[in-house]
Image 1 (cartoon, helix red, strand yellow):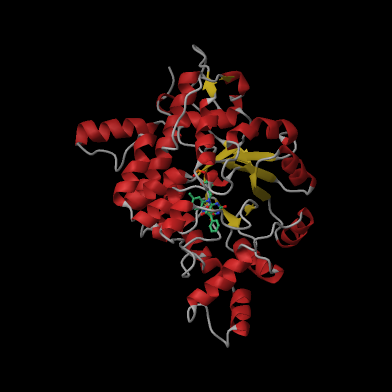
Image 2 (cartoon, rainbow, N blue to C red):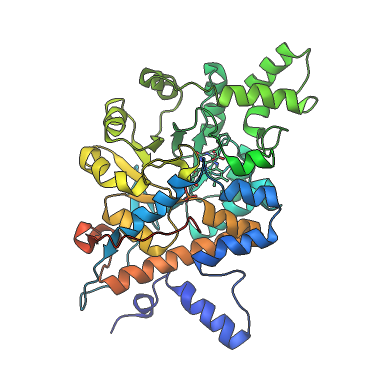
Length: 410
Ligand SMILES: Cc1cc2nc3c(=O)[nH]c(=O)nc-3n(C[C@H](O)[C@H](O)[C@H](O)COP(=O)(O)O)c2cc1C
Ligand SMILES: O=C(O)C(=O)c1ccccc1
């Protein structure tokens, strides 16, 4: 007979916990467990501009739709009567072992969504041992995020400044604060045309919010003072934001050779986030990065683009044996994670759902969303006859198209 741990794998425990708390103690979960209801719950309680900023995408939202439709084209084919417990969700990424294949996507501006902001999300991640990827546009400082994650894993996402001295200085701070992996986002040389934000003329960063990584940096401060009569960013936040955002979003794509600048100042793993074309994946490998995130930024950059999952198999085919392929854009359920891993991703990043959780109930909400996803993944694997992440492969999937449509309701 299996021991207790085998009957109740750690991540699966959350399901039991919800039933027990509710039925024995009359306490319901802090928010819905239904991914279709989550966004609507957030819409009800969040400030309109904040909700719009999270939920919105580029243009008419066609890429967001494609991201969801892409998942619908793959179906899980469950196997029966195979050893399926205890589940092993562990993965090894860049030489480190992690408890699960789920990572928190970098998300800027979190103070706008809830007062517990990135600190709340980072603490929720730490409690679940989910790596927290701090955004360059975080609303908490590098040391604050380091403190909130403690001994738990933290990665850093870079919006890459045009000024190499500022880049070098930020990377030095990030390294000193114990961030394990550098994620360089390459799909956001500038912000896309985003009607929901344009219609309310809202973006968190223009007035200084979310610019702390720049504003705190000693080299940025020196250079800002030199061009503004000795002013500090705190004296002139709008002016400083203009300077900082023009650095972080130069509007230009950098040539591949410029990765040398990052490599010179970061000796740990470098992951390029925002790859969609297999040829770019090949170039990434050729230029010596440790990994890529197959991502279309959650449909927030190029409208009318291919669903991110649609490109995953080709990319894995092209470079899967040469680099670590991670995935994001459109992950909403355990089944989605199952599919992305079965198609060759080694881990997945989740963005909006956790931000809806944060917006509804702060840290507790973010934790609930992540714990739900992990429990759902654990259960899906078990019911599909898959015992460990390592056993996931395309053998568990079939590509089936039923036609029809889903709205970008998630
Ligand atoms: C509100 C919001 C802010 C974001 N900010 C960043 C960011 O600062 N840096 C970055 O690389 N990606 C950012 N992203 C993109 C996410 O990291 C991720 O690629 C995307 O959300 C994944 O898609 P999903 O929301 O469908 O899970 C942001 C996404 C959202 C929704
Ligand atoms: O909102 C985003 O998706 C994001 O990452 C961003 C933030 C500022 C400028 C451009 C993109």
